[in-house]
Image 1 (cartoon, helix red, strand yellow):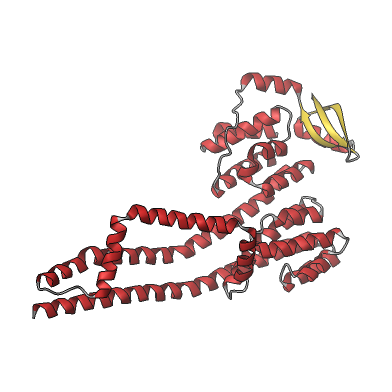
Image 2 (cartoon, rainbow, N blue to C red):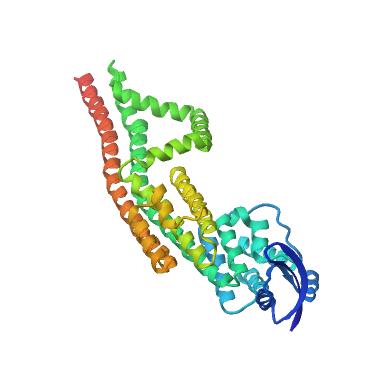
Length: 409
């Protein structure tokens, strides 16, 4: 056994210092909780001296960006090691030594050294990588660590991350076809504007005729882009900057979010894509022992639509007054009635956590259905637009062709 020093919260208001004998850091935390305290800092002086001497601290210079796949990789590796009973310091050292990803290696090393300096894993994560992993991730890690079930919390977090990856994959797949059509259309315009129409124009000019107006317009547009490409880029950048500024305006975004929720088919997709993450985080936080109002606040951070976010915020305020979750949702209509019925059944039977899980599964199916419906609607729309563009090119081609024949005879 080793001696561990700790700082803990007594009666949820007083910080106390102490010392305890334990097998490892996790055992020390559990023993401190048995005493009725909430540990905020636990460390072994021997381990601290040994690690500081043998390891160079990699100081964080900037917040790294991790893709969804990298977050899943790091979380999965850490969860497997902790589930096997490996202490957090050893687990992070293992990831640092064996991960093929340089960013993950650095993150593991910095988190390890932060813990060695006396901070908890959750504190280290919040201080160093709050922007990298997000408030939901760090908030759940803090809850899981305080409850002594960090490995279970990591496992629950993997569910959310893999769900986000699945949704992202389905959206990407649905975007491939329209992207292909756009590239095809662009190639067709370039082909006719750069090669076909100039050939007709040369023949017609030789015979004293002019290229038809529609063909001239297509050629003129492509020539302008070719000659003043820098101006086109500046204009495009200015337009993107304007849209970015506009979307940062809360009044405009709130108005747009309200309008989007009134558009058939698209509204279902937006609504369920927001509720999917919300219900999953609510389930995870509830199972981790987070109080319901705090769990709702944490889950609401995953909601991007301001209209839905505002309704959930009102729901949280009603819950804080002592009303049931069912009554609160009934007042605000933040979620569809079918899911309110499920939550009502969960509250009545004492199986609210299971109902959150079941509701999340149903919402995932709704997301699939909404995405499929939107794809079915989107593909014909793109085909009509593409057909219209091809029709314009075809008319311009035949005008130029018959105009050339007319100039010859």
